[in-house]
Amino acid sequence: MNSLFETTNWTLVLEAASSSDANGGHALEHLCKRYRPPLLQYARAFGLGEDDAQDVTQSFFQHLLEKNLPARAQPDLGRFRCFLLSSMRNFMRAMHRNATAEKRGGDDSEHLRLDEESAQLHQSLAVKDDAGESFDRSWAHALIENALNELEEEQIRQGHEERFRLMRPLLMETEGRERVMKEMQERFGMNEGASRTALSRLRARFREMVRFEVARVVADPAEVDDEIAYLIKLLR
Image (cartoon, rainbow, N blue to C red):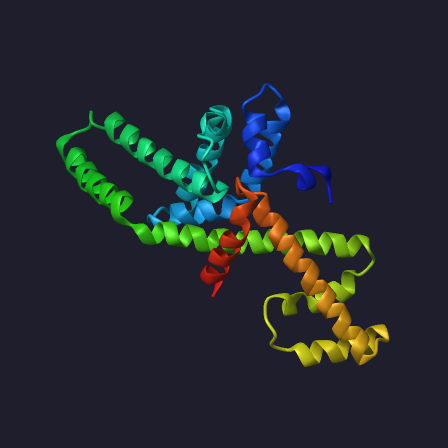
């Protein structure tokens, strides 16, 4: 693994962001890029088109990094997921208020249209809880995908690229297991026991990767198990 993946976690980001060390900003930017898809999904859940959702998300990340928001966070901040969602929600509300205020100089017909849109968006931001649930579910998928990608890179470095890509679907489900085991035996000259052992070890390593990925985005190691249980529930 690269050094950033090994050392970056939410607690370290908070500590680094509070200092003049540029590493804190780089670490935060790295985490943000990894979890950009859930925020895009959150923006889409409020009815924004793809281009607008992309623009809002990009603007949010710029705001997050330029203002160094994590340095102002409370010690009991908790999960990085919760911090991002809360910050994104506040950012969207502020953008909406600013855009509405800037356009108040138009004609009456424009005012009427903006008033109607303003009421709809305000109501959506206030009560649309399913957008938060959609964000959490997208977060779970992103976290799993990150763990899978890291595992794939590790397997490639170990010379097991073809074997990993054959077994990768079995890390999330069991359908097709016998077919994959048979192909493993035929392609790599493995007996039944060796192929099953290879899959068992890969699954164990995947669990380690997921646990490590979760540990990077919680403030307290004691939260890891609860966060994993919550994410598994979302995926089911």
